[in-house]
Amino acid sequence: MFHVKICGVTTADDARMIAAAGADAIGVNFVPGSPRCVSMEAARAVAAAAPRDVLVVGVFAGATADEIVRVARDVGLGAIQLHGHLDGPGVVDAPELCAALAPLPVVRALRLGEDGLAGARRWIAEARTLGRGPDMAVVDAAVAPGTGSGGLGGTGAAVDWERLVAAGGLDIPMAIAGGLTPANVSAAISGTGLGAVDTASGVESAPGRKDREKVMAFVAAARRAFAEAAG
Image (tube, rainbow, N blue to C red; front, top):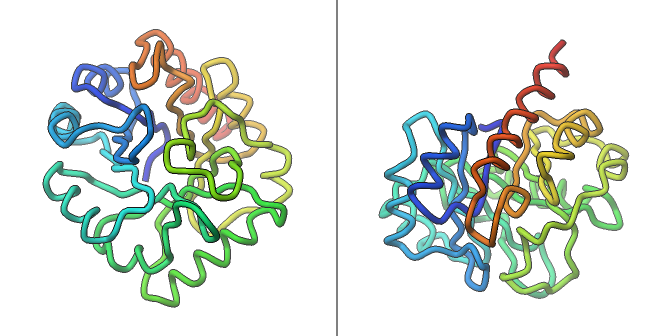
């Protein structure tokens, strides 16, 4: 679905800059409480500024399928990212959402638990039983159970790459997120073997404000690392 995604984009100017830098996806945040959450007007401007070959992903947590579909149609989203908890207290995105959002592609944000990715595998299996599983997974940094919507992502905390490798893969494409910066994205790619990366705070001058030099450096480093991995 994508190889390099810059998430938490809040302005049309940043969308154009990120596309020019070579990213193939941008994330627009609709999660209440997040410092990168945008209004519908801002979201429409961001989506309109993105070239057709750049995927615009709407990030949601705890929203209903009807709410997500309405926003997707109004803004012009190309895919949906579910960033809530898999289960338990707090902001949960249930497995039945995948089928309810068809035909929109779904990216499922996951976090390593004490059982590695076992919880993620159960969620994906249940989603498939209910009619449709996610198309891609993004492994983000762990958060405490019950964490509210504003603290689910974009914190700068990193994924434990060794634990992720030890947990084994999934049968859908995977991206790594969580604390990625221009300085460590190459190591993340080589250390995990994953073919996609996602960052928000790692290329910012302030929450929701992307830094051009950081974005350019991040995309260039990621592209080099993917090319090296491909031999």
